[in-house]
Amino acid sequence: MKTDKNNSLSLLQFFSLLFLVPGIFGLVVSTILSTSYLATLPRIPDPQSLRMTPREIHGVTVFETVQEDETLTRVEYAALGCFIVGLVFGVMYIEKRSALRAIETEQELMGRA
Image (cartoon, rainbow, N blue to C red; front, side, top):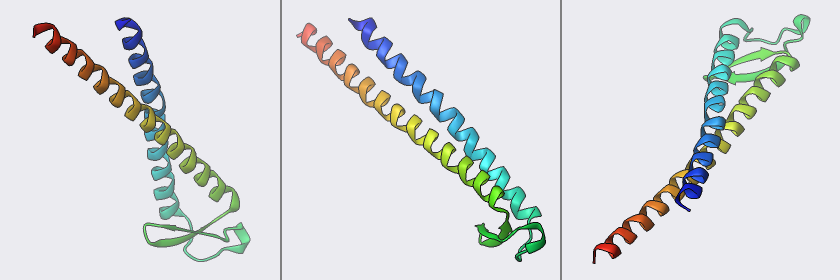
């Protein structure tokens, strides 16, 4: 019975890390992309290169193409979603581990009394 509980804890921990690590990686990638956009994209609309979509990055408005906007938006949302799922699994893992430890401690105290 104890191994079943440990297996479920290990599974929660695994899924938490499975989603947290790529989520953090994706957030880093989106930060690199937005910083790159800030350094290279024009700050005024450029109809010739189809850079008409505004995006505010660190308080500066740059203009990008629709495809650049969709790419960065998808990366940001996917990374954030992945991170949040990993965070939920992590919280579930911590709650379950705490409950199991409380039960084990109570059983030890009852056994000693």
